[in-house]
Length: 494
Ligand SMILES: [Zn+2]
Image (cartoon, rainbow, N blue to C red):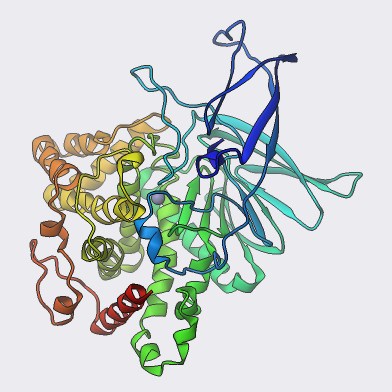
């Protein structure tokens, strides 16, 4: 019950029976419940376990429908990303449907969530889930929608079924609208608030484009539905991935419309000077929305199909997913677009972190081994993905993309380790294994970020100074830089 990672005791399981016989429930960790099967179930046989679930869903924090940068959150050593919360328009109930904890090759089990990064990956399972809600509400989950049946008491029962899922997401919404399109037999749906309908429709287009691009390059998407849900996310999260379903932060839907208020700076809107400086920002926000959707769609391959332990080895899926989102921008909008997103989202994230006193360090660590959420974000989403850019440069496009495709094809429905992708790249290129291993060490183990990404110096950037590290200059126009500097001042002031 991963919701208990942030708030122990918010979800309780009671009254367990196995094949109708009452059994004791153990709770060795806040997020882990255990019932003993006696006799042990043999392979090929089954057991029916029934449990009563009761949960208290925390209320969504104030202004969690905005992008509002909370300066203290980057220094926090725990983050709630909003997987489990309740607001008037949406209840996020992720972590409420239990899954089976995977066992590693050495016989130990995947660790539970650490309070930072992803919450869970379970053994791929088949889920058939029914949820009853008042008729004012609707249920959104993964897989095939199997019906909406009115109940005698006035409520409505929604049912969903999905196979091969490493988790089961669940949302209850009120007043949401939907757009959908069919792509290669996959029904893609975007679910959003009426107030955000314009952005919600663009999100649908982004999701369809990203699915199309990734299917072409990484092989077919396995389910016949894909849903994007607008939801309140917190702790700096832009989106959240599940099998067949992703959520994207309400703040991002509103960001392109009104960047200042999305950043929690609505009060500064009167400053025409600032408005002038931020002119380029709404376009940047829109690109960030598209980039975020692409990132979450790429997760359907990396971690949902090609599985890894996201808590023990976040470096095995997040960096490649982030790089795949850059690739999507390159395929769809061209290299310049990808490069400016790389500079604004990846390099600057690392540099801001360094400027605010954070240290560079190894990326190959369990989520629990990062000291702050700022460190986790800067290293896993900022620095680590650019290993793949370096690898691509070294191998050339043909070998690099051949290797990526082989990695996806060979590891569907398996578990991979942090270096599995690089080994696949090495194999495809024939004889580059050693130099790739060197790159991996440089980017994921050593602390060479300042050399490779630049240490960060906005004043220097504005005057065109080179950042060093192989000319890793930022590809952002002067107006955007000025806006960013202004934002930094505001954030520091806060
Ligand atoms: Zn991610």
